[in-house]
Length: 354
Ligand SMILES: *Cc1c(COP(=O)(O)O)cnc(C)c1O
Image (tube, rainbow, N blue to C red; front, side, top):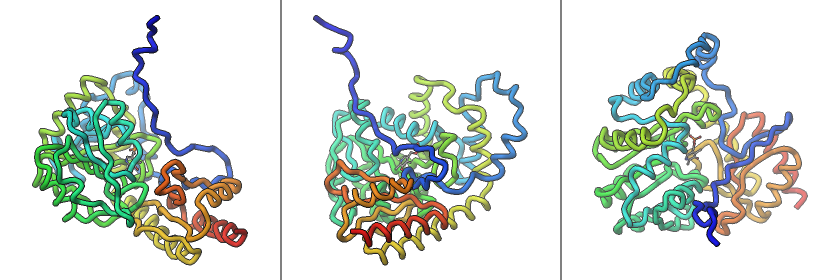
């Protein structure tokens, strides 16, 4: 007998880091920013006329698109906005990856890429990073249906230089190359300038990490006007009003407050560098993180031990236990300086116990 169940789109979903809600917790598991959003965001909320919410938002999210374009020195037709960069990336996959050839991305990277590929039935091949979690460039020279690179990469934190990206793009002028820059504000260079040279490069960024607005869901893509127009055609075939009125105004206000952004970003980076020294002292090894997290492994004690012991103390970090290459690593988001001091004390106690 046939059943509606025969025609389900079955998919194993992406599993985000847990969102516990304990009053005393130290939450270092989903790379959120420990500092509040810009005070300009509070101003928008304080002055907001709720009567505006009766009406649908602007389908083009023009205020937000214009603010992002201005901040980055681009034309507005080079900017696409979405409900977090997850939404932006999903639409980019749908828009650009429609050949029968496999798309390429590393074996250790953002674990949503393979889920979207499965969901949209896009063939894909995962290319192993080398033992130092570096890209093997020549793996990306062959024929393919498109490329996705997180830079800095997650969860490794390792950044690739522009020359390496340029080399990969030069070998791939007839497919779209997506560069996911979720963590770029904690590194020292963006690949944004490449969109001026290459009409097939899409840069994706987010408000969730460096702008402390994970709860608002704002992400954006930047690229040639042709790439952006193609994404908008897909977007408007699916949902005409993706961004709420509030996210548009809050997003525009937040990106204009450059001084606050610079200050918060510096705090996170300073604490990251402090934490690196402490982790080294405790016997951890890690790549040179250019993100707001450190992906670290202890020289003798398994990752699971630290993970479980920290959890008992309501300190939450992330671990990818089902990937054998990285099961002993902890991905530790950078919290406030105080939170990281407590983390280090607890790691030290666990180390002495084992
Ligand atoms: C956090 C993250 C995203 C998604 O962020 P949004 O909150 O959806 O904007 C995308 N890519 C990578 C690599 C990330 O770490």
